[in-house]
Structures are given as structure tokens and as C-alpha cells.
Amino acid sequence: MKPPIWFIGAGGAHDIQLGNSAALLHWAGKHWLIDCGFTVYPRLVQKGLIEKIDVVCITHLHDDHIGSLSVLLYHRHFISQLPPLPVIAGTPELYAKLYTYLHFLMGEVERFAQLMFPEVYAPYVKAIPTTRLHAPHMPSCAYLFVSPTMNLLYSGDINQPVPILKDAEWIKAHQPLYVFHDVAFQRTPSHCYYEELYPFLGMVQLWGYHCNPREAPEGNRIPLVHEEFSIEKYEA
Ligand SMILES: [Zn+2]
Image (cartoon, rainbow, N blue to C red; front, side):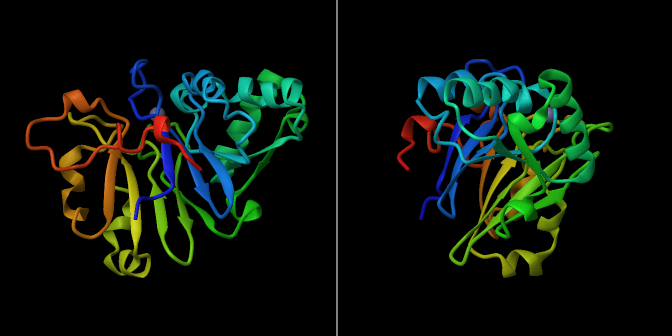
């Protein structure tokens, strides 16, 4: 079975053509937007998806992950005239910094967004804190979506496999588990070197994103989300 996720972009921070990594997930009857970088808003407008979104969740605060969040919120408020959009921040530090950021840009945040922790929004989404595993100063988290029939882990940007994956019992308890993971084809301090994900290939169904597939070394064994999960194929 194919997990119900479509990527609006699956590139790295500077891949304008591939677009910032962000996804639309259809889970428990809701349309989740995961991250809203600076290339995301134009693509959502082109696809007519601005008003489809029920909730946004944010992995961290780099511009390729939140750079068009405020314009999305303005659009929904002023053009679509929709109520404040739930925006999920997975840790208290991420919440506080996101609030400060939106307050600086937009003033009265509550007019446009309902900032909240995942467990307040729904019991089926959980944040897995990954702070300092992407950038030293940056609060960050992965998100786990659970359901009776499948589970989905979205890593966010991270310089190593999401630590919970080292727990074989946890993996066993969460089958079937679909994992969408940050990958890099060169070793960097902020993204996950692709070969570090090899041990998990037989244990979970895993795809890599946040990379340029043309830079994948010959022999790369990590399936990449480009094409297969493209928003061009969105059908929910
Ligand atoms: Zn980042």
C-alpha cells in the first residue's frame, strides 16, 4: 500500500527547481501540510490547495521550512476568509520561537493561526524532539502519525537517523511503518548521510527527501520521493 503523502517539493534549501521539502499528508480525514518553506505557497496556489489544508505542522524554523507560512496565513484570512489555521509546533522551544517569529511578522497571531502542541490537536500525531541534531541553535522535531492500520514517521531535517529508529522494539510495535527521511549524499553536520539509513531498509519502508536525486551516487539504495510522491499525483 502506498502511504497517503504527496510532496510539494523534495529538494534541499537552495533547490528552487525541486522546491523546498514539504508534504501534504491525508491522515484521519484531515489534510496536513508538513512545513511551508518559501517555494511552497506559490505551488499551493497553482494547485488550488490553499483552502484544502486543515492543519500545518512545522519541523523547524529555517526559511525553507517556514518561509511562506505567514503569506499562507494571510491568504487564508484575508482572501479565503477562513478561521485561524491550526499550526502545530512539536516542542515548547519550537512553539515559543515560532510564536515570536509570527508575532514579529503578523502582530496578533491569534487572528491568523492557532498555535498548539500536537497532542492538543489530535492524539494520533506525536512530536519526536530532535533539537540540536540539525543545527546547534535550532529547535526541531520529527512527527509520528499513528493509525490502526499504518504509521508514518516524517524526520524533518536531521544529521543522523531519527534516534527512535535505533529501538528495534519500537519499530516492531509500529509496523507497518513508513519513514520519510532527510538524506544527503555528502557528509554534512546538518543532514543525514544516506548510508547511515541502510541498516533500516529491511525494517521499515523508507524513502529519502531533501536532496537532489541527480546527485545520488551510483549504487544508492535509498528510494527517493521525487516523482513517486510528487504533488502532481495528488488525488485525495
Ligand atoms: Zn533546516
